[in-house]
Length: 180
View 1 (cartoon, rainbow, N blue to C red):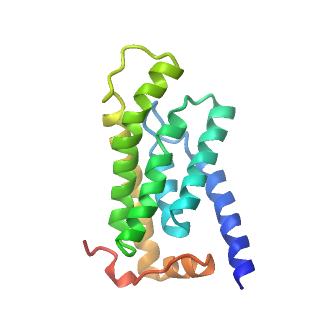
View 2: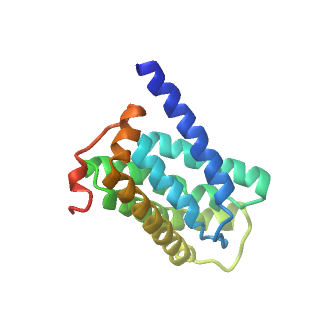
């Protein structure tokens, strides 16, 4: 049984990476990629923080390599992906906190870390350390709302628990979906 769960987790990770690469150009403006945040949050809830971090890293590397996206593909995803999973687990499965983790991790931490990366490594000029905060925050809010609606719908139908169980992930009491 554990072997099947491990294989399913790997397959789910591969599917999430593929979906992230394919849907990331939708609504994309430099510094704002709402669909990436949707994938980060869903992956965090389905698989946990470490898989979500790996997923965001792989998506970022693929997007940078094949789509010519600047390093924002990594700095704007990895911190939120990880914190989304951490906050989800720390809150014992509250979907709202998965979204909050993404907003803090990407909208604040990732945005601030993007400044030195883009100025020192990428050579962009005229930026301030808060330059990316508004666009990253708006992108995470848009993607977070979509992810929240999607995950609440899965939770209400009982599919979220079934998906998490089949993946061998931590399952929480889903009667607390909206309790903060």
